[in-house]
Length: 150
Length: 386
Image (cartoon, each protein chain N blue to C red):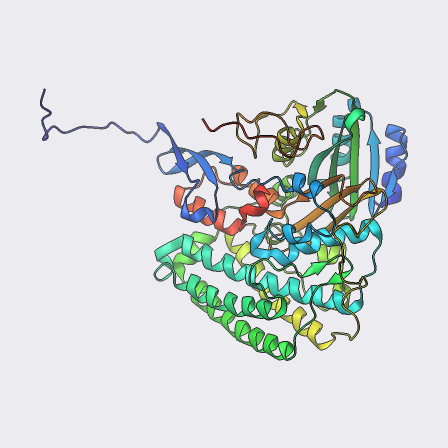
């Protein structure tokens, strides 16, 4: 599975043109096809290695979730991304495909408030359970006062 | 009513009731602050809930508030046991974003620093892990004290190089901040000779010890499929039969210039991870010697000294740079909007992904094995919680 093969398959199945992002294939997907693409990447592209998942807050344009998966034998790296849309926080969970998505998605929920649908254990992971807000959102000020200790 | 002190309380315990036990957050074997909520049936763990975040400082938010010049010195505080590597990951990402040249001499110095750091970090890992497994290894702290003795030698070399022993501020965008002092090269070679010999001693001490073997062999097996799915890296994935090392998969700095071996073990247990790291000790020594032999002359940075904190500007865009740290893949993802500070910064901490494998491998083991498994993962909580 070379990078060119993978590009052709992605183009054929998803109708999007993969971009070269510094050695990785960048694939921008609609939100509805996130999980479908995850299964495709894992089963057909052989990307069994789940590297990381995170998000970017594009302010008015809403959140973008991205994840990096790899096929270690072929040296193939895919960075998939999806824009959730303004005000939207729901995204399909990738835990059914890669168990490694579990903690990564919990962190993404904790920091950005992205709600991963189908996640088996959607709790905060780094912050306290009763924390208010999601610190990596752009509207969360750095000097937000701490809630008083209870 | 007076309580009859002689009254015998009988506890009916058949071993099938479940007990929830907190391990941590201040458990000595956690090497930091980590809480494992264990569900036990007798001595056997049936489920584990790993609670992390006690050391969370929101580095990623902090990264958005500091300029490209300011942040590298904070970057070392993610993985404070291998500060050289986390600094390097951040500056590499900035260099990718802005396409900064790095002079050859600086590339070699980066490799020397990174490999010495790997040796120091593995020393701390071996010592603490053996201490976790306790009395069976000849009186608890024996191996720990030996390892710390060797780690000190490397910290001395780092102190001579950078003036600091733990958090260095050695790397900067475009090169390194310090050049090697006079006579440093000979001292490093001497240190490496000492450590090389001591590694043989550790091996003789441990591998001939039936208690050590009983506690490490067949314990905490990570299958190849699980290792990939969870995204573990470094000695963990190499202990599970995958020859995956960023220095080979996506060579950075001047690694293609050096001859070294990537050790792989297939058993996936604590012993396999131990073996991988022991070989890595020697390979790192080899690399440092080669880099010292071939250290080119020339400048150590492509940029003049920093005069103002907002000096570095990078174009709009994004970059992901990753390096092979002592614990695995340390990656930094940066998104720039063209300003003096990143729009978004993400840390891919090796320890975070490595630790995420614990809930999958611990169930079925005894409580005492939890400690051995955790130690073999070598988590640094600064990097887990960031």
